[in-house]
Image (cartoon, rainbow, N blue to C red; front, top):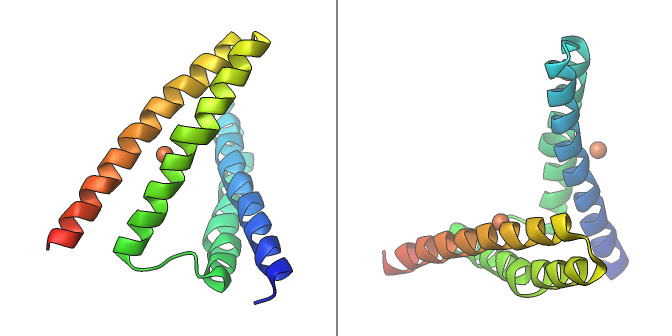
Length: 129
Ligand SMILES: [Fe+2]
Ligand SMILES: [Fe+2]
């Protein structure tokens, strides 16, 4: 596949994933205020973003592999968030005086550590089986 097409697919996947997550929260907001028709619209659209758009683009990119390969991919993603992304974001937010954001980044980073550990344990079990 052409590298530009590959890069565009990855960008599109991030957009679709963001739209999915955002529409789920928009649906929750609408539901809490009794706008159930709007909640249903956001929810149905979110499902299309994930189960059609994201899924079909992910397939073109070969995003999903076998369980062991998926676990290795997940571990490296979590490791990036732990060692680079959230570490840097927390430091930058702290330095800029954005204390709430700094604390949130640091807390989420702790969750990502637990995710990485759980995935690593699951990979061990697969490789020992
Ligand atoms: Fe979409
Ligand atoms: Fe995570």
